[in-house]
Image 1 (cartoon, one colour):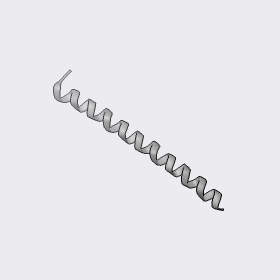
Image 2: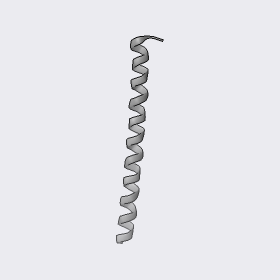
Image 3: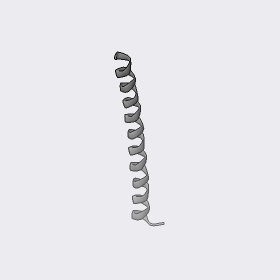
Image 4: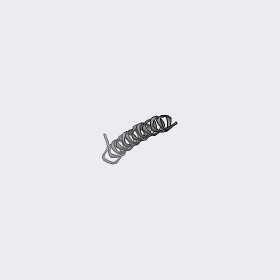
Length: 41
């Protein structure tokens, strides 16, 4: 049982960092697009 909990915790930690990286990528992309709108093409 302990091994299952440990594997689940590692998997959830992995998913957390994947989600964090995805969110950071979305923020960077939208920031760049906003800069293009502000300063024109």
